[in-house]
Amino acid sequence: MSQIFKKYLAAIFVFTLLASNIMAEENMPARKTMEISVNPLLLARGYLPLNFRVALTQKLALGINAYGRFFGIGSYKIHGGGGGASVKFFLNGTAISDSWFVEPGINAGYSNYNSTGYWSLSPSVVAGYTWVWDSGFLINLGIGAEYAHAFIDKNIFGKESFGLHGIMPTGEFSLGWAW
Image: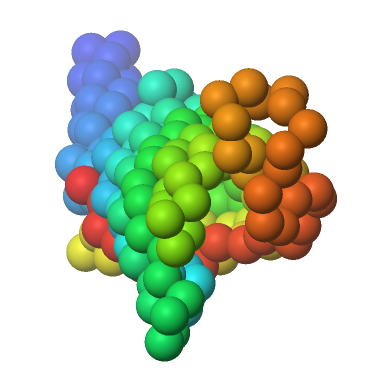
């Protein structure tokens, strides 16, 4: 074989390898960087939670959530609202993709129970798994613990606690959409 033919063959081989990598990336679905979800299990506790997450890095997503609280049985009525923030660390995948995760967060809110207003503060940690389909549908499933503290006066360290407080189990089962 002549030297020129070998050079052309080598150039065609390198071009084919590079082009196949480029075309493979074109056929892959775009990485999702945002999600919105709702936790239907919290509806049983009288919450209507809405979560929004945005990927900040390859392994980290910032979550912001808001909730409305409504519940009533007979004369027992509670309503209020609040919100919080969380940081979701994706352990074996990229942010907002199929992956195991650990998510510390904090929620704060104000509620009214039969004309008694109270504030609440709840730091938590949840670990679990996220499934994201190519269509964008997603499921977050996790279990963890939270420290709930509710208080009547405006002093967070006041002695007048209200309702349930202390370390309690928590979890996440949310359905949503990623894009």
